[in-house]
Length: 410
Image (cartoon, rainbow, N blue to C red; front, side):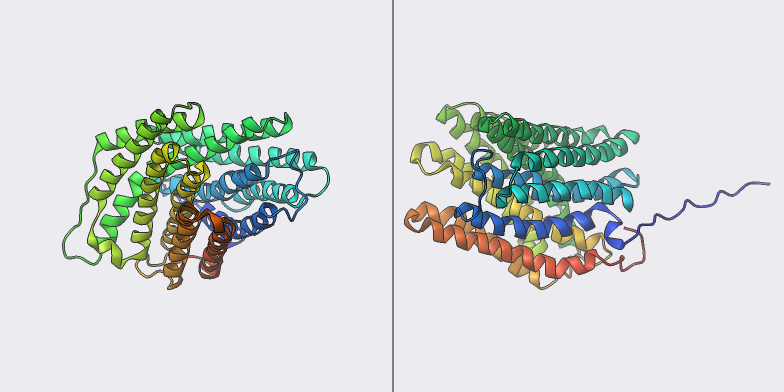
């Protein structure tokens, strides 16, 4: 008699928010984005007792926006997407909770430093242990699944996660050796590795989303243009740009590499364009985020010659490539992976994306035109950022904390 094997047991977790990584990390990441920006307002204005001898306040802010907020969103995305790519179940339930708790404790420790509580070295030690554990466990889960099915095409993403772990460790080495130059390099490595990850994943998902999203309402299949040589050129030129900003002081090398990255990606965007994107906020938000990155590279190209603050170009790249891109991705992924229609997002997404555009304009362009009111522009940008994530929390956390509408696990 032929023996029939019973189906594998359905995964279970103690709460829907622990079903997959996107649920808890998107929720906590959005809350943290509000809290850390609110705290940064007080740190920036000198209203806390942060020990400037232990950490440069600007590097404190950069670290938590990159290795705190952004790494939470990356963890949520990859700990969910890798399951789809490989078919292998990713950490859920108590295993996912363990990974998350390491991230959360590290964030609390960094906030204690920002508030200026006594013994910052002890808080940094706790943060360093938990941060490293979080990133290693996340990387292990991703590496294990990808290598199990031999998806070697994902090695580019895996290598960036490995280098991000090293960049974060470099920040802690700099803190404990009282070498702010190392902390700066670690922060900038984090920024550019994350943007490299955004360019890599964006190349895959943005044209795919545009094709699927517009084809849904069209009697014809929509196809946008992609070019492998543009992909290769974008990667190589971005590496040259990163090297020029981190290690080379030649302004012409910076200008040429930055302009080339922007130009190549503008050409990519033109190939992805379809007028139908303007009817769908989950598409035009991604498109404008990528366009903002291109504009940012052009700002890097002209900055050495016009002499405006290098920080404006950095924030332009961070707000578009990280801020706008992560909010747009979270808004879409949260719908699809909870069984909801991506073609019927909450009405608040329009306001969310417009607020992020406002943050970009007031943090980048208004200071370029009028430095006299710099503090006012910064405060408006920070307020818009906080309001954007407040709307995300109100609209999305309730659905992230509930089971899928179709009854499936995920």
